[in-house]
Amino acid sequence: MRLVCVSILGALVVVGCATPPAAPLEKDIPSPASRNYDLLWEATRDVVEQHFELFVQRKDEGYMVSTYKRGEPLPGIYRRDAQTRYDTVEELMHVIRRRLTARVLEDYPGVYVVHLEIIRERQGYVPPRRDFASSYSLYDPSKSGLDASADLGETVTWYRLGRDVHLEQALLRRIQEWLNRPSR
Figure 1 (cartoon, rainbow, N blue to C red):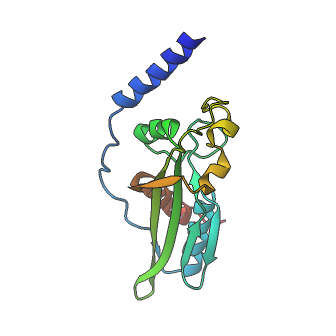
Figure 2 (cartoon, helix red, strand yellow; figure 1 turned 120 degrees about the vertical axis):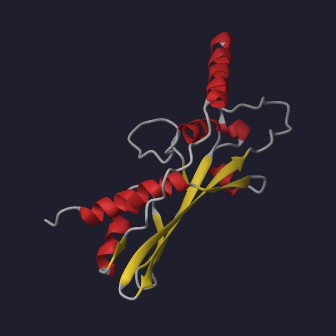
């Protein structure tokens, strides 16, 4: 059993090291624009709510902010936030969270544009406990302190990884598709 675990861990490390970094975006998608503020707001909110839970929505001021959302490393019923293979492997190896800020601003008189910013952060691990009665285990949250309440601990550090440009571009593309859909 131990040999199987070591070989699986070794394969994950090799795959993580062999995965090339994310390719640069060939061309940035222009931000979706519309003369109808309400329509653009509704499109942005509908697309964003499929990925993030919104914490603040202020339509009159033109911005929305999401709560922090942890990445889902395994495929399933959740929408995938990792848009590249590198991000997928990183989310499998580390706890990653994202936070979205969306702005609907008037760039030109009568023309409103969506601006998205998604910030990625990686969790710094909690050091093992010093009581020698129990061993440190990643599989037992009571021993390791890596459960959901670990986000609130004093010893947890979040390292900012920067903007998630690939997910921003995917959401902007979906907002534009929402705006271009035929009216019903």
